[in-house]
Amino acid sequence: MTLTEEQLSAFERALREKRALQYDSDYESLHGPWFLEVEFDLLKKLLNPTKGDIILDLGCGTGRLTTRFAALCRRVVAVDRSKGSLEVLRDRASGTGTSNIDIVLADLTQSLPVQLAATKAFSVQLLQHIPSAEGRRDVIRRVYGALAPGGAAVFLDEVHALSRQLRSKPREVARKDSLYFHPFTPQEIRKELRSVGFGSVWTVGCGVLYWTKYRILSRALTRVDVLLSSLPGMPWISKFVATIGIKSPNEDVLPSPQTDAWG
Image 1 (cartoon, rainbow, N blue to C red):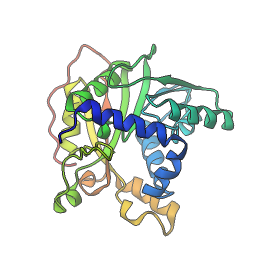
Image 2: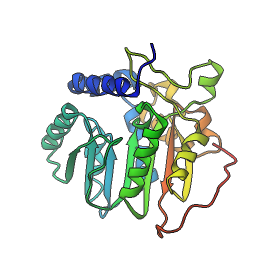
Image 3: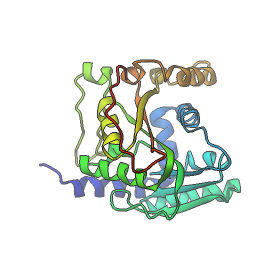
C-alpha cells in the first residue's frame, strides 16, 4: 500500500508526541552519548554565534541543542510542531534558568510565524523526515525568508553517502510503521538551498568517525571529527551532511550558478 504524504506526516507527529518524554534517551541510545557533542561543536563552528545573534532552532524538539545555543547568543527562537516536545523544552529551560528562549508551536511545512529577522538558523535531522520534495523546499524557503540579509543557515541531515550506496540502501524509506526518511546527496541539498535564493552554499561532513561511537578517547575523537569535517570529500564518507547557506546582504541580488568539485 502506498502511503500519502499526510499519512506519513501524521505518523511522525504522533510518534513525537508519544515519545516526547523518552526522546532524549532514545536519541542517545541510537547515536551514542557523545554524538551530541559532535553536532553541537560543528554547528557552533559553522555558525560562530555571538552575544548579539538571534538564532532560529528549527524542529527544536525537546531542546537538546536549544539551551546550549541560548547561552551563546542574545535570543533563540525554538520552533517545533510537537506540543509534548516543547513542554520538555520548557522544563529544560526552567531547570537551567534559561530565559532567552522564545518557544513557537508551528508546522514548518505550513508556516513560520516569526516576527523578526534572525541572524542565524539551524535545523538538525528535520528535512530528512519531510515526505515530499515540495515540503522540504517550502521549509528551506521559509528559513531563507526569516533570515536577515547576510544571515546564515545550517541544515544537518543524513547523507546518502558511499557507505549507503555500496550497501544498496534505499534513497527513501516510507513505511507505515516507521518514520519517513530521505537522506540527501551533497549535490541535492546544495541545489535545494540555491533554488530558494541562498547565494553562497557549501557542504561539510558530520559524523566522519560516527562508526566508532566515540567510545575510546571520546572527547578527543569528537574534536577530531569536527576538524575532519571540512576536508574535501568528507560529506561522502560521513553519517550526516551539514549544508551552509548565506543570504545575500542585498536581498535583490539573485545567486549565480556555482560548481563544486568536492563534497
